[in-house]
Length: 151
Image (cartoon, rainbow, N blue to C red; front, side, top):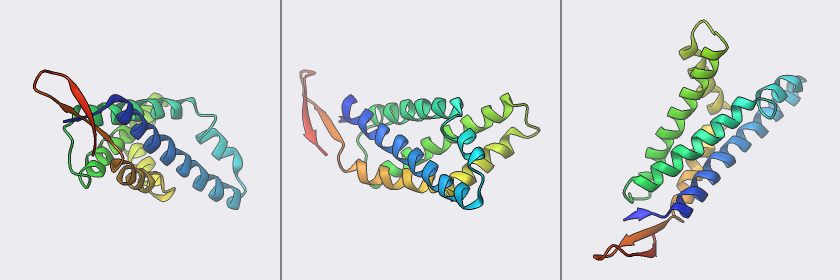
């Protein structure tokens, strides 16, 4: 049993776009309270590399949901949370390396820490837990045809 392509894609879009938006909104509130909206704009909407993260994370979660066997609902946030965090670390590390940072790995983990503080990672885990209950599973029949079955 595997998850359908449509279900895997909508799951990934919900988790990635939802968590990124929550992280941006929380960071916007912090930036507004500190009076430094310019840094928020340069980090979130004006940063073209953030859209690369969105695309990479969506692709990774879609493929992870599609090509892993249907797992119990409690394992989905664990597997996908690790995949999401891995993409976040790779994206942040490569961004820091591209900007010729002295220690790209340190910058990557600082970005992951910021993602925790802005609730981006916790919201990804919560959205994954919520959305995992609504995944559509394709059950394979003996002759190769598939039928839809809710999980």
